[in-house]
Length: 361
Image (cartoon, rainbow, N blue to C red; front, side, top):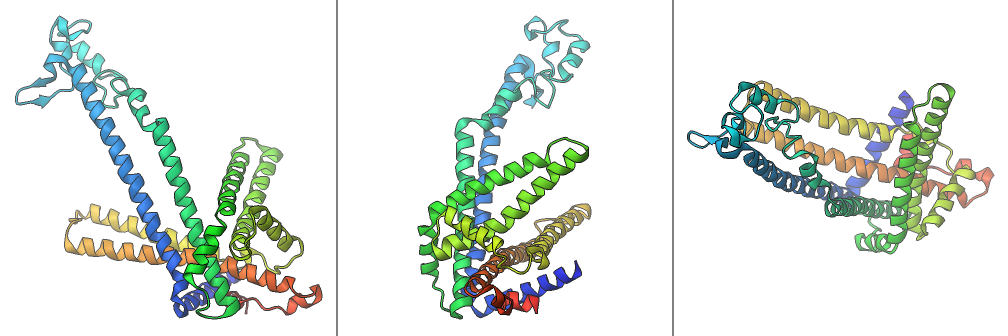
């Protein structure tokens, strides 16, 4: 475990140095962070807009239930809580009694602030209309596709850097290669989604004993296989122009012929990247909690400066994580290609390329 972490840190440091020498390698990952922010803002604003509509419907429903006595004094809203005191027109049993007021405040009553009677699921159902579901699904697909396009561009640029030298990869050529492979990338996305759903389905089976362990093991095998295969398929699609099935066969050939002499877990890049990103998010939550606990004005200059610094760290860490993972799997792919080009007896002499060589030294 410790060796895996050490190799992972060596790989990360060497990848950062490679990106510093050829800064174009970092551009797609930085763009990915900002496109993720853009899509997050779109979803947030759409959610606020939809909830705003529902809030308007809720207010109307409460006003309607409130009747003539819904407002008293200087426009103070009562949300129908006094309807039971207004006589026969209130439409409740035992009008004017305190008991009727308690009846309204019980679960699902018209005065229940959870609103399960007034606007209920009929109103909340407005958030799950066919149009909204279609829009959200399309946005999620575009979001995923944008991330894969940027990952493909990174793979193409890193491949050129490793095989042809610094500065040989052109951003325009990498983008063109990715867009030519767009149908295969879309199929990769669909199959990835299916595999994740199958793994989740198997893992959520409520079977005890040997059956439960068997389902969990099978789910783990699907996840591990597709994690490696999916990351090796994308370089095959972008770099070699393979179809999805061609990329899948390519990844299978790499595994079957043992072209990679290490496992992905032997270089702890994935775990380190995830742990670092998680720590950044956790630190932000701790800082925010501390500010709220000490009642610091969140709009004060020190608080705004702290938030900007934290956001900058998050952008840098996220961009580096995206870039390092893409560089790692591209190094594995290049290593497999070089091993495939020689006889099996000579493969042990093939050195890992770039940052991966530094990690395994």
